[in-house]
Image (cartoon, rainbow, N blue to C red; front, top):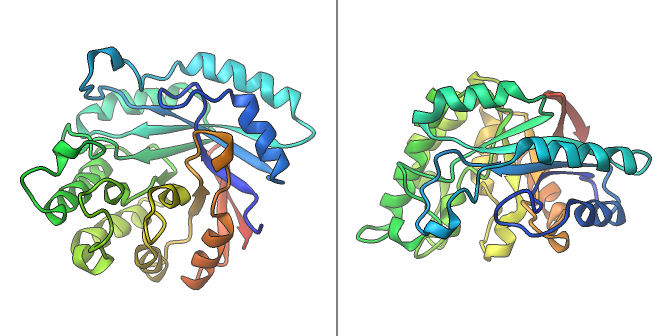
Length: 272
């Protein structure tokens, strides 16, 4: 396996996982990973549809960090463990997000769009009464709004996450159909010296491509983009580093020679 670092992982500190951190670490070591970056969910002001889920994505960052430090010490001679976070970005939270990101010494920050104009694309309601194309276009446009509002991150996560949940998912989806807005996103990221994430979690949704799709990756490289991290988006041990051989092949076919890791918010490049 050419890629030895999984940079998108969730444990029981994220509301949508019940897996103990140590179980994830032990599996990563078994797989031969040299580093793992935990990126627990922090989605401020998330719109909860069920009252019993209130606070589901509010991360107890102090507790998470305390436990991670214990694990780092325990496994120091076996694997490098890193302190990351996946921030759900919304434009009206620009101040709160900026303060939060500065208050902790993260190794790595993923910015992700889990809400689009106060609606979660995970739910069927986001797609009701319109075509998937209209829904996807709204989602991509909201990423541009997020990029105008927030700068303190390292990569943008699973950029076409929305296609996991549409009525037709990625059956009719392609880069060319959204080229105008996607190019604006990629150009903005490159201008800001930010990267993108290649997320292999798409495999679990039965998509034909990873997230983002291959043509977006090609276009990012054509525009001069080089910063790209690889993440399985695993919430349980079985999915850690899933599809990483495929990810390496896709990246090589798109013209990438390196993948990226971060420590103390500094990028390091590794040969594919």
